[in-house]
Length: 90
Image (cartoon, rainbow, N blue to C red; front, top):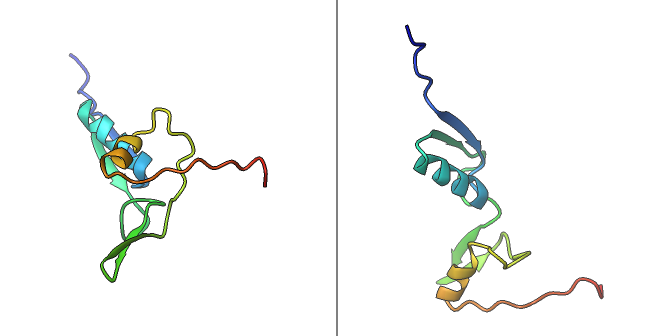
C-alpha cells in the first residue's frame, strides 16, 4: 500500500515584487500557493499614488542593479528615464 500523496503547498510571506514573483513561479510549477501580506495593499516598497491626475511614487525609487532586473523592460517600455547614481563621492 502506497502512502497518500502529499499536496505541494507553499506559504509565501509578503506581496512585494519578490513575493509576487515567487508565488507566480511556484504556481507555474504546480505548487498550491498561499500568499500573505501584512499591509492592506500589495506592492511592498512600491507605492504609487495618484494625486490630482499625477502618478507619484512614495515607495521604492532606486534600482540597485539593472543587469537582469525584470523591471528594466517595463522602464524601457514606458520610456521612463534612468539616471546612474554614484554614492562613492558622498
